[in-house]
Image (cartoon, rainbow, N blue to C red; front, side, top):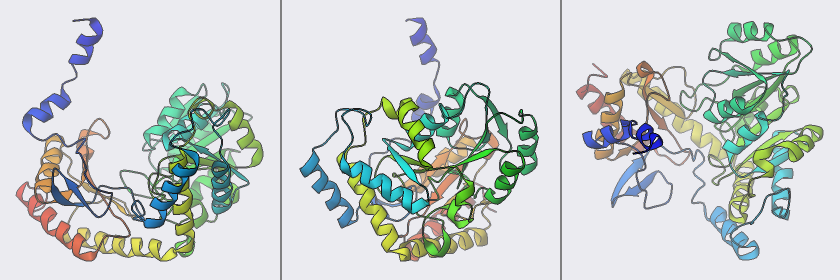
Length: 397
């Protein structure tokens, strides 16, 4: 066995979970992403999806994708920088920029690529990136690749952020990168206070709207946390993904024309990645059109979210500071989290386990997420199954 093989073999967490019969990953779905899915021929209620608006099987979205394949083919065979720019890429970028209130936008092939590609190049060696400790892995990866000094602050803790800002040289670029809605905990960033500190210390702000686009926004606009807080002019870079509310795959960064022109010519994850497929681009564009035309979808999402939040609190579940369709059900035990995931699946409920090292061992949780198309009856079934199993395993008294 080579030294590399020996090193890799010592990773045994997945093997041990499989041997114990509690391995919860890569479950093969044999249907569309709806409130019910089919796995191994069994229909289960889906409470593990990020399709917040329930658009992945919308007839107009599917038809737009099909028509794009008929016209443009299945792939681009190159990057946007060279032979991979279509008119529908440019059209979508204009629509996204207008939607979030910025001059320009760039479409990347994945949301992960956006954060990695922007944060790795937007600041220089003498500059600073400040990031929340619970930011998404793509932000952390972008920071890791950057040559700038990286300063982590405690989650949504403005005193901690200010202390880190005070460490920065006043005349150097300082970029604060944060999630709009934190993807596992479901709580919302304290953006108004971050903006105040950014102005005080002459820093810039980038917000990842992956889990807030199509969810937050004034008057159910779905425009995100930046618009909802009324700070669009104060946030220099707005990032979003297509794989949640926009029913596709890909992502974007929006900002002023000068910043976006820089990224088009310097972001390696953009320049050296094949461009988003015609099908994905057209699907995201149509989903955006539906989002703009149907604010009642966002309202439906919030109606079912409030119903679920109230129900879990009434049950006595520990759900942290969430106020969004992402509801963490804290278990605080790795093995028990795996076991509960397995038992719920056997009861017809699909949820996602979040365990160490993704979180600390005493912060493990079940991630319960909602779509606008979920019904109260479906949530009631989940309440019943979760309550029974939580009591059985001692999570609830």
